Image (cartoon, rainbow, N blue to C red):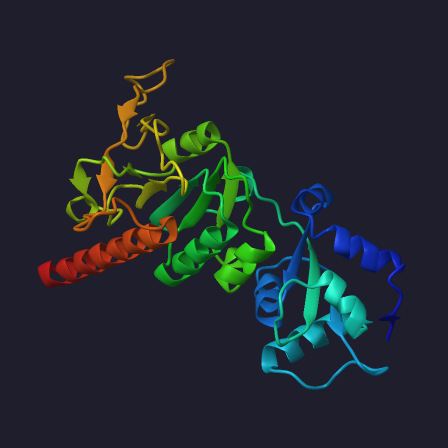
Length: 302
């Protein structure tokens, strides 16, 4: 087993440098802290480049929970396991997790073209959301609610930020996701969803009164949520729906633009909005509730 002991070691210096998000993205890698999150990345099919664990002896530790032991065995079998002394591990790790380990993966791709065929349901679009903690919390909700995908529109942070990974409990690796510009994502949604709604403080319709059950022919509905500071402002006012269009009618022409309905959360107090991750959770589970009710109704009608 190789043990990294020197602060001048090239691998240690490189890993410490990759804690800068811009450098990490430029290098095309993802750093994952913790055994649970690392295991979820491995299970998603990401390629493991290196696994680094804090050690005190000359052999790999044998303790730890089942997730850590599984990841450790995978890394050893793959020939990418490295031990790191306590002093050096503090230079490359993020936070104070009990299982002192760090994994490096090849970036899996984050474009709309990398998305798999999406299952029916709700698509959450995060527009200019800034805080990695909020992004992570939304992915955690998306995993629990069975959201079809999370799309990041012009977001300054990415889902592989260390804080987003930790806040999601590794769900950034389990939920289909992509990043792009607002125009790129709007074009993608035109071909993949039946309906689209925009969460706005000034939205005239309560989200409880619209159909979020994704009951259209494509089986998908998108809801757009804006940034922590400014919401959606004047963005996402229109889109170009194509579901159910008559291609002969629009031969040689694009279908007309349509207004994106604004919806809001009913607020009974003095504040006019909730944290974006809370809003996303309410929308996601309202969609779940409506789909469950629809399924029960279909069964009764049969």
